[in-house]
Image (tube, rainbow, N blue to C red):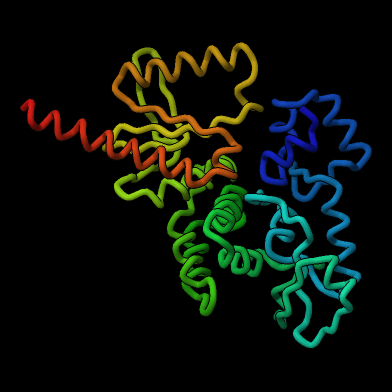
Length: 294
């Protein structure tokens, strides 16, 4: 896999070690040297178009914000924006061509809302938490994973918000959990939260005969396991064998294992929710059968 494609699949930002698992390490080193991969935080890289976004913000006399600011801080996003998000002063007048170059937000930012041409950690989170739920949780999970904030701080930021998007922000904050490893898992967690009767937790340890596993998402009471399966991480022969052993032992031990591809989670949310709802219905039916048998 090309390193730039791997970065895209990993949410727009990736560590060198992550890239070298799924790409030729020599390709990763070459793109870092050529600056096709840009260092955005300690050990974290994004594609070179992140620099172009900064130039666009400068040309508009604004700052990078929202999901364009998040990768600058080393945080992954649900989907990289087609155009950079740029926040400018309320009084700033732009030509049609300037407006077309970015997604523009007219806000008078406080001095401490901006650091080196990018919205601050707190401001970036406040902006991103107002986004649609999947996008909000993906960014907030990543910010907590990176150690820039903790879950309590995210909840405080969300609680202080008012106006459009504030309710979504508080819902997103309630779902934040650094154990979600990437935006793929974050979005699957959000979709699961929208299915009545399903209560999943990331990375719950499960002891199986001869094996100890931590599936991506687990509903312990219903014994349902959700796995976010990316081809990049499950494509070699050894990975295939490991997955077969893992899923077979889970099924043999009474767990219902549901596996979802990156494309389905990212682009077929209705399908994912429908399957999850069917799994809940099956769980309820089996519980009734056990009660009748008893």
